[in-house]
Amino acid sequence: MGMSGMSMEKGATGVTEMTVEITFMDESEARKAGITKSVKEQGVLVEKRSDLPTLADDVVYDVHYVDEMIMGSVGTLLNLTHTGLVLRCQDKAGSHCPDAMTLQYFGISFGPDAFVPKISTDETSGKITLEWRNNSMVTYSPCELPPDPE
Image (cartoon, rainbow, N blue to C red):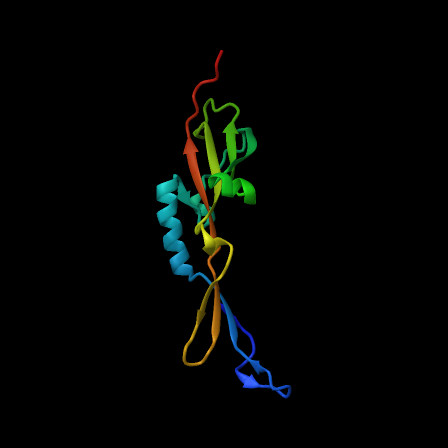
């Protein structure tokens, strides 16, 4: 997916204009990176609705938003967080639902790729390409919780 800018020509003002194309990480590369990361991080990569469980209509869930600072002091300075939702089953008696499940949001690339596009120049044409690599993914994971303290 790309978007082209101007062509390489001298304009009436004598200023050379150049072609700039903006692209995004290739979909197959992003999918492969997402699958690899979801296996390492925990959970199932959510690509379509059928990747998620069907929740019983008669079960009530508590929904909690959770976040955690990431990448140490740099992450704190930039306010970078890993975020997700925890859905906790209030009463699972007679239900096939897990005690809890998470939906987590992950960035696929970290480091400079997440903030600044990769810049490349075609030596022949002079075309400049800015490739953004800030794709993300969602994972699902069922989990069993320890019993509540009495």
